[in-house]
Image (cartoon, rainbow, N blue to C red; front, side):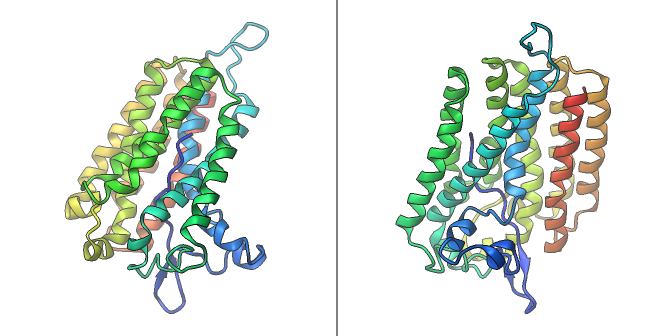
Length: 321
């Protein structure tokens, strides 16, 4: 399962400074002190990244299940609850492994930015070796889950490591690291289908492409929070590349995502309820593109987080379609 760090959440302290570590979160209140750096490294107090990694998996499982055969030999139509649970756990641990990898590779940059200098590695709470060991542990848990699937799905899952490994370096090379985040974060569109059917057809490929377009939209919105710091330390992003042209490009990214999702549903033989749900999901994206204030970090964060609702709508549409 692809596991990378999702766009990072931000908390505003009472002093007005920014940090991406929720000081009043459950980790600070309830977790043992020795475990807190590891839990924060895995972003377990910020579930939005796990959801963004999980949605393409669940969408694909739901679409693939529409024509999958139950033990009776008739189309089951409903996603396998065990499979949904396995992908949920896989997304959780692989997102944590990806966050650890991202923080290891970005440790020098994170130490220069007020919002990220409190993270476990730049703050000195854990060493690079400890972070690497934790990453390996999470990856092994993810591998154990992956090995429960069919052989073709295992192969697809192993292939996901390529975009995962290269993503953190892309912000140093290209103005469009969001494309590579999309490649990693939407791999579940391929893996979910493979886990259900044991193959790859046009439908999951279209879903994967639509997910990349969706990621371009929400991560561009998110990146506007960091555009000042990114400029100071030389980090590239689509937000910096687009600047004031962001809004029309959001309409393009999100419009492409909806069209590709619709084509994926058509290719998977989903019924009219899918299109009805997708229309509702399109309204949610239109609200994001039409109302986002790219110069207000708080509003960018709110629009970014709203993609959890978008994911639920598309999932429901795929199930009932």
